[in-house]
Every structure is written in structure tokens, then in C-alpha cells.
Amino acid sequence: GGMGETIPPMAIEINADEVRTPPAPSATVMVLRDSPRGPEVLMMRRHGNSAVLGGAHVFPGGKLDPQDQAVPIALLDQAPQRLRAALGEPGLDDPMAAGLYLAALRETFEECGLLLADGADGEALRRAEARIRAGEPFAPTLAALGLPLRTARLVPWSRWITPRVASVTRSRFDTRFFLAEAPTGQEACHDNHEATETLWVLPADGLRQYWDGAIELAPPQILSLRHLAGFASVAALIAAARSRPPPLVEPEAFDLDGERAICYPGDPLHSVPKRAWPGPTRLTWRNRRFEPAGGLAELLPAG
Image (cartoon, rainbow, N blue to C red):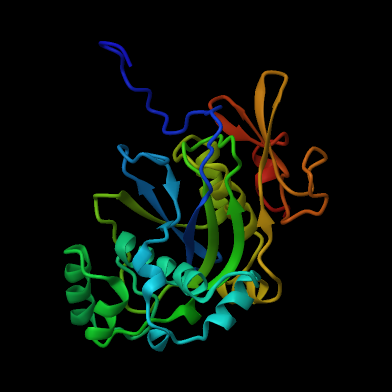
């Protein structure tokens, strides 16, 4: 901006440029725990200076790193063909299939200090964290410290591919969303570098906070929370994830009456007629946020 301009507080700006690069393979993890009011999901508030969705609340995750695809098969607890089958992507090669799970495990550990394994030794976890922060590779470091690598903790949930005209980012991602039950005896914490806040939230409460303006969310998080909000327990969510292949979601954006509308499978304007989940099939950018036509009520499960 020019001299003396103040940066607007909103993280999310609408973009209209076409991105010509292929989408970067990425992994996102919705870490879940049961509470008396239903399952809670872990969200991190991205640092305000982040290039992607600065200041917004997201699930832990990030892009595949070359090291994620270089993990020896011997270190895996599941064969790559099982990982491929669970992802519902028969065309993936072994390094990519394993790499998506490794990226999910690594990002969860790096961004919120959770190793998705029960009974992990606390002292070994602290040593692993220090070594990985110093730039040592994730999987070999865990192996050297006797810490388990549990791809089986991750259950594929959905796959999102950013459209060529990305509405909220300057880059494209091919993101596999996973569910994972939070490990026992570990505390989630943020690193104050990439993330500045850690929030365990009931999905419906997260949507209410979004509607009240207390937190900011991008469309994949809004619709993922809506989908999670219909379940009564972590076990029910994991069972639902295992019972079906993850839906592939390729949002399609339209400019309607001067407003940007993003449509999802099942919407009359979307090229895929079959819905991918309950709730809204369209979000429109108005009031400097993404809104379904039916307002907050359409973001919450009935009842």
C-alpha cells in the first residue's frame, strides 16, 4: 500500500487472479477429542503475518515436503497400498501415498506439539521437538528416539483442490483432510511462530464464533466444521470416515450480481450434481465474509 495506509484487520481478501501453477499436494488434520457436549476439534490461529490466511483459524497442516516422500517403507506401520486405498486414490505412487500421511503427522507435531500416538515418552517427545526444530528430518528422528510413527491414527475425510481462480489464496493446494483422535497424555500448544493461539472447539460453537466475528474462517474450514457438527462422538466420526471414500471437492467460483459465490458439489451451478456433505452448497462473499444464503441457521445442524 501507499504511505500512511493502515492494514485492514481482515485476514481474508478476495482474489481474482488466475493461478497457473499446479496445486501443491498438502495435508490437513482435524484432531478430535470427546467432551461432555460432543466432539471438539483443534484449531490454530495463524500468525497475522502468514502469507496464507494470516490471522484466520485453521486446522494444523501444510504442504508436502520432499522428505515426507523419502521415508523408508520399513518405518511405516501400514503398507502404501493400504494408504492409497484409504485415500481412494488408486493412481498415487508409494512415495506420494506415504508422503501425504507423513506430512499430516509431521505438521501436527510441528504446529501443535502433538505426536499422534498414545503413550509416547514425554522426554523423547521434547527431544524430538528440539531436533526437528533444528532442521532434522521428522521420521528418522522419531525412529532414532524410539517414538512410533502411526499412519493408522489418520483417517482420510475429504480432498479439496483449490480452483485456478483461487478466491482466498494466491496459491493452489490439493489438500487431503484427515481425522485423528487426539493422543492421550499430550497437551496441544502453539509455537508462536506459525500459530498464535490453540483452540479446542465444538464445531457448532466454532461456526457461531465465526458468525459473531470472533474468529475468521476460510470456506474449507467453514464447511468442514459444518460437516463435523452433525456427529455425537469421535468414534462416530471415525466410523463415518472409514465407511466411504473421501469426497473430492473442487470448488467452482462465479460472480453473481457483483458478488463472488463459491459453489460446491450438489449446487445447481456446480458441475458435480451429487452433494459431498450436508449443509450449504454455496457460500457468497458479502459483509467481508463468506455467508450461506440461509445465514447462521444453514451452518448449524437442525435440532
